Image (cartoon, rainbow, N blue to C red; front, side, top):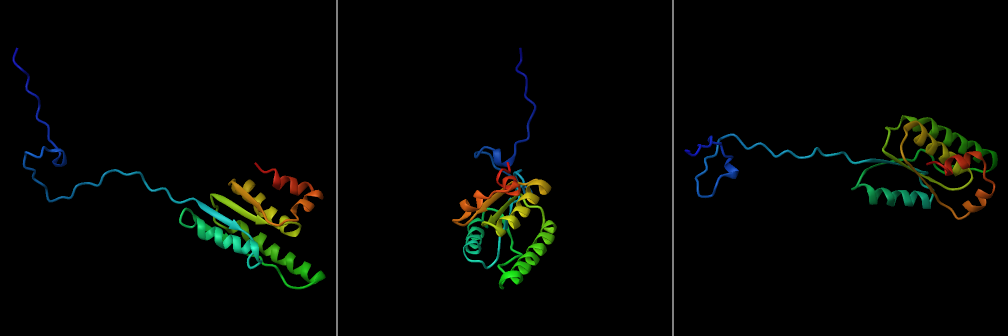
Length: 166
């Protein structure tokens, strides 16, 4: 039986044997298919501005992570000056402004909320709960301060909600 002839196949220039001359066309080779680049995850860091240790930690955290992810910082509140009723009024006003503006942030992939005890905890709780239940994103609730254990001794329902977020 005679051998069947194979149909001729066109060989790509980059697969051609080195012994055969290769002619190249004027059109450039198509680029190989690559996976589309996935954008970096967005981290929103929430904490006070200019209040010592937490502010310093946020600055270093941002510097450390910004080459790995898109890092944004939300610091709309600072430690107000004053005493007694004046201090309380300024703290409340500062927090109300921060809380009112927070929902207008672009939704991140992860939220990292910095907090301390007492007043700081309640303010930070809003940011953590909003992020978890409205945006539906994972939340890291980072507590600073050595007296937080004493604060836990007087724990209330809102504290349980924030600390038991899963």
